[in-house]
Length: 193
Image 1: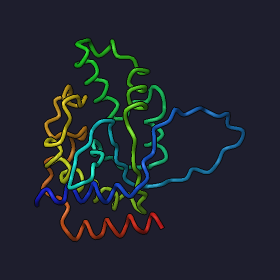
Image 2: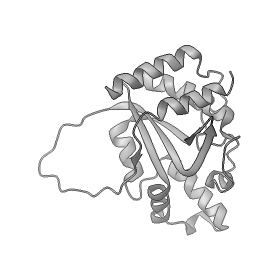
Image 3: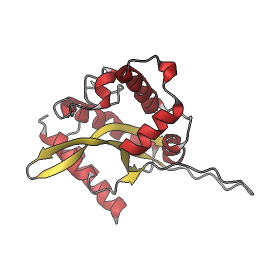
Image 4: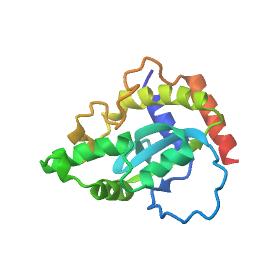
């Protein structure tokens, strides 16, 4: 695989609208609504993490996750809820500041995530399909991300050799192939129409 797949995945995902991570306000529950499950994959982007390809500048994918999108994405907006990405950010902030982990407050981590990250979301019909994409996109992105990290990327303080916050599947042998990029392109077109 060449780095052309790395550039192609960013170009394809750039078609999806970016979404900020906003503070969630709890609303009183007068009646229970049925739970809606959305399976899918989400891509996190971090402020100032960009790269140039040709004449375009792209935001660099720094984290890929899957799951029930409604609950998983809400975890990033909820104060004091620490999914794996927030845990890594907490450790990196502590290392950057030269303090013990206990010195970093949940509010600091939440503020950092909300002010430095955006996401793009691709809803996918099944959890198995989402996992297939996760297991090919992460190693594809991991192969070249380290070439594009900025000097100030917080992940440098977390000892992340691949230039992304993910640690699972980074050295997985499966990467995106040309046929996968075509399939992903069609999937994105379908979701946007």
